[in-house]
Image (cartoon, rainbow, N blue to C red; front, side, top):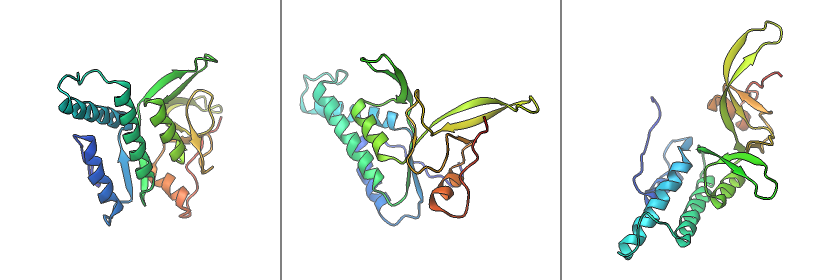
Amino acid sequence: MEGVDVYELERFDELTSVLRYLRGDHGYETAVFDSITGLSQVCMRQVLDDQSAMDASKDPSLPAMRDYGKANELMRQFILESRDLEMNVIFTALERIRTDDETGESQIMPSLTPGVMNTALAQVDVVGWIHVHKSRNKKTKKSKTIRRLLVGPSPFYATKDRLGLYGRYVINPNFTDMVNAIGGKGKEAPEEEED
């Protein structure tokens, strides 16, 4: 993609250098980590590889509770350090259905361990769930397919708009328009769907 630089990391500890670089003078306005679900798997792989390198009897395919704890802490530190960058930071994540054991209610959440997910959800201003939606115009009865980013309250999806800029949905979301709405650069918040 033109105008986009991509860095594919092989080991989680490479993020230390990436974050150090992004704290410096680089000219980038936005960093996208796609996806933190995959990044958490890279983190766990590194924890397991490091443990098996120190202890040959350790099976690198069987994580112990201690391994989960270490991977969770590394991911939480990464999220907190990313939040403090002087730039826009976007995390993407795969989704997962989580069911509350007490209530039996289900919600679609980022596919992360609970500790990492809670940290990620708490540290960002906007959490959205993007999907394709078939919309029908009530007057003309014509249908069209649109992309919708759900950011408003939902009983089924982990969403939020701490900034209060976007309404319930952003229709055909465009990152530039969304950033301009945040920065107050004279643009309105992106279009919201009519019900």
